[in-house]
Image (cartoon, rainbow, N blue to C red):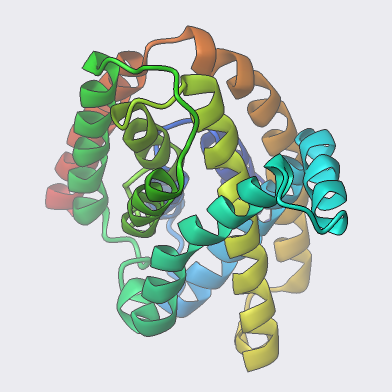
Length: 264
């Protein structure tokens, strides 16, 4: 990997993290096209760094919401902010469980398996298409909804399954308001990514990578800046646009990825 590759992958991550098209899937496709031959653990480590950059961009864009949540929690009252925070914690349980007990199995999927990514993108397309056809009542996210959405987030750890696509689609299928679903989807991933970074730092996994620190920094900056633009744009786009457009895109890219996988 060189500086150009790091910038390209960072931009891909930043743009696709907030689009329901699977950022991890696009990263794996990008790595394959760029000829990235990193072993799975190193590939996953670079992916985590880029996800951390977009998590930071999410905090910046939703800084008002974050401050309101923190302020509400510090009041130590059963208020809206406290309830929202508990729902975020509930949504984290499935993904945290999968990450803790199936980490090695997940790492093996982040090694350029484009064929697998292609099939997962088609599943993402199906989810988006179903959500586009669903009728929603405009109700807020409940505790049960939070857990079910969390299960979708856990499944979306697989490269090719869009995290935002899976969580927003699940929320809409449950009858939740699309704007609230997008807000919840973007905020629920931040604690998980920060937790993953903390876990890797404590275990020493990040220090074992042979990837040059300068490339990690370049990728981080590119993903952060692209994430700021994409997150701001998607807040409005999710409200107005139909998910079927993204479903068509994921289906086409999935077919191309499957063809690329068979050809190689």
